[in-house]
Image: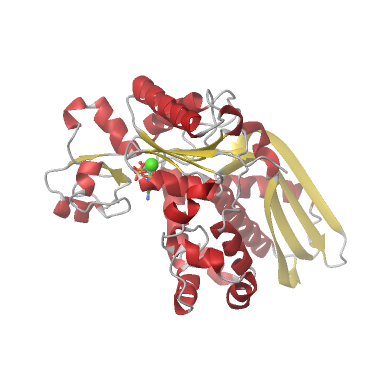
Length: 397
Ligand code: DCP
Ligand code: CA
């Protein structure tokens, strides 16, 4: 049988705000809100724990944050600085395991199975890592250790800021089972309602509920949740060179009516580019190879691909490349029935440690088009894919 793994989750405390407090020591111990200036119309990216006491939260409009915390210090985001700190954190984490998988700018999972024999070792490794981050970066983090990713993350959240929480498998019943089901990843509001009607309130309730009954009410998600609750969540941590497992992200569209109208073709290419761009950004990927495929009315299919020295993740870039590729092969006046775009050779975007493949400003608020994309993605997250669309689509939708 495979040895049970030990997974460590690391999450930096009030990340952007702590960096600002470190760089302006007068702000230490004070409410600090990062993400916009008073009077501006932005939202708070995050805030220091001192500001949280006043009810300020990340994502809150700045105007409201000012109302809740008028004496707070408001600081604009400085994406490059935070990205740099993030890279330094990853460098430190790399000392503790060959398998370190960052999942956001300030969070990562480490497979520490090979470095720990018992709880004592786990405490030591957690404390040592926290000490090095504090000494070298003057920042604090919270750490959770458990036998899979979900429980490790739950452990991290049990004590924040500056916490270290270890959960042995023997303690699951005591420490994890009493928690509300909302702590389990993958439970949406709808499923939560269905489960509550069955009297299921805690992770423990799910763990002991018959799996086939859960399948009946929740479909395929039922058994999945049941497994997660019993601790059979993912314990795989991907090292950087394993990242390319997701090799490509693509999308295709079959036209309702075959066409050779280039306006319509361009519009579909643009829409596909937006879809692929959005999916890349959602999973924080960027890729170097763009491929366009298409099928004529007579079902003959063609494709054209090109690998570039730079990474793409922006809709407009994917669109301009796809158009170029498409028209280099397309025989004008022939009718098209299907179009598709794929970006491959993808890597995680925030890993810029020892290769110069990806620009550091990727996905941060540094330039206008980045900001616009972030806003559009957010609007679509909240209101659905059609929340915002180019006026030109109206002609073809
Ligand atoms: N962030 C952002 N917009 C959001 C949420 C977060 O720009 N809606 C940024 C700012 C955070 C960083 O990402 O500092 C990490 O997000 P976390 O959710 O981990 O929040 P913090 O690290 O700030 O606080 P915590 O101590 O709760 O982890
Ligand atoms: Ca954090």
